Image 1 (cartoon, rainbow, N blue to C red):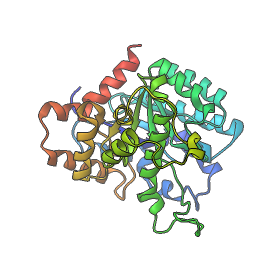
Image 2: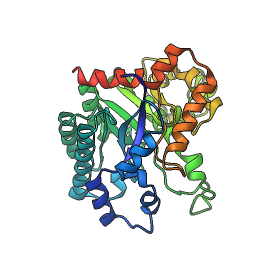
Image 3: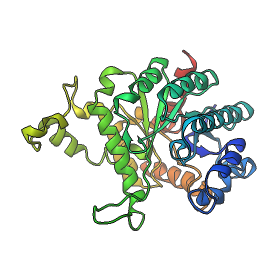
Image 4: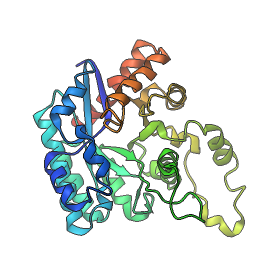
Length: 338
């Protein structure tokens, strides 16, 4: 089916949204989500989608992260409720939603492993993971079974940044001017990618597919620093007493591992950044995504501006088709062909 598949769009299934309102404050962390009607109102969402010809959406869970909402069995129940809702939406509206990435809370690794199996059997093509779990990095050894199981099943990871208004300077208590979002989220993604790379994740699981939000964050722009600092001079800035902070032996150069990630076009319409990311990752590793519906228009702005940015690059037709739908369709098809 021709057209465009938006590979990273957030949603609240109806039952999950109703439950969410009982566990999060509508005047606090949930306030913004309540105002984004297209997050939970399908009719409104469909009207916005209809403004773009041939436009479909792969569904991913919306923030806030389940890890930040609940603990124990309550977190497991929210995870299952979200994933059941996503599966139902895809089953009811396959012409709108060709696939979904399921939620995965990492409080309880055994529960997460059980949910990988359950969601896989219910049609998930992968899982959205946040870049840390309440401050614990993803390369913590306790999470390795999760990555191993996703890799074993040939499923995909959507890596989503997460950071609240934690301070930018140690003398302050909170980040000012929403720096934590504008610059903090790209840093969060980049740090998580580096931790996964230097933990040897891709040596253990060379076929693992990870889609990074916002075009790989800082990685494409800092290619030179990656090559100089990590491929040519790793350890030059670390005293012998801190040698344990350096990575163990790896099979490839750092640059090679970073280029194993996939990236999306969710850059709020920035043409230069889109060009930079596309040149870095290559046309076969970039998927169209907008981050719908997180803008003042309920999603239309991000979709429209992302399309405009790609149009401005005047890409060859074959390249554009791969980005618009071909690459994500291939990832979806690979999970279905297992």
